[in-house]
Length: 458
Image (cartoon, rainbow, N blue to C red; front, side):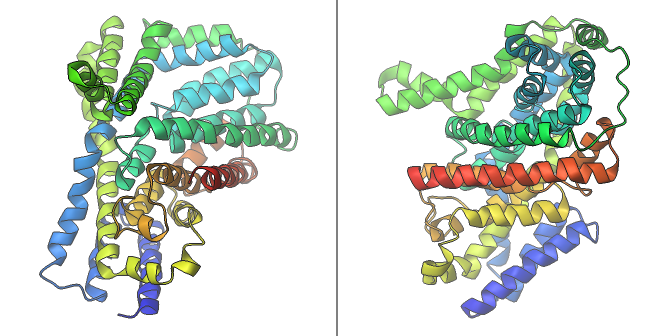
């Protein structure tokens, strides 16, 4: 098949996949796998080789990042169920103070969403949002948008949230999550600043139906604590998040300094994401013990596997599609036309993720599918290589570009859109003016920051 025919086939395949998910109600796993098989047949791959190509692509994600995704999600669920997320949120307010309620709530959301899904995070923190509105007299819409932005930014940029972890694994930087976390935090800054400016602006234009009454912040926090029973202390709540990051940092420093002997080997071992997150899980188990909820551990594990299972399978399906794309010769065509196509560079994954996000609603599906298409940065046959993104830093920035696309935009086919709109007391049309426009501004701002970093660092 000629190069132009290959590209037309690729566009049709992606369009068919989007239609299957968004219009025909097919599960993303089946849609991606089905399109991968159909694409392999249409481009004329040898029939005897197709099963092996599909199997290799599927198994790759479980080998590289599957366990890490499960561990990260389990830590997050434990933080949520023990009330540690509430403790973290209250600590943020005490540090920042009541004079900057929008900023406090935004940072609160950003921290809580590192281990907790943004949907759950919004539900958990919404009582605090309402109490802060009542106490400070700040617009409910402003606070809703600020909280949504903080949660969503961490959700797409900061591991151990499943989306960025899966993307990092697919692109070959799964063992360098500290770099992803660091650069992701850096990209978060301009993204959140833009969101904060927009939150203050839109709060004067749109009004919600929230009824605050005589809510008091401290009383609301106390009521939430009472619902959880015994709630963990601040250091204990921080440990499951901070311990893995510190261990990964020590492992990276040890590798850079080439420290030999058993101490060096031990630090590198503890600094691998799988082991570091295992230590984080042990810290989280301490939360269950201290709150007398250890009996719930098995149920929490089952709940985590139910949530993470679809993410893992969709991620693996994305890997299958990526393998088929490579085997079909798409990368060869791009390399042959590198002078034209490679100009897209890091914008290419952003656009693919944004199209998938807007069409089918799930940020995680958009991110994992796009990452599967891109492939591993060190593989000379991958899309990453064809676009000239062949270094760990380039792969890290590509993960973030995929994340920026994965938040662009949130509208009616996105569950988070409905969580923010309903809990924020807004009508659907107001949701488009706030949440949808917010995610467009955030995605564009983040991508601009990523492009600037790419010009400097790559």
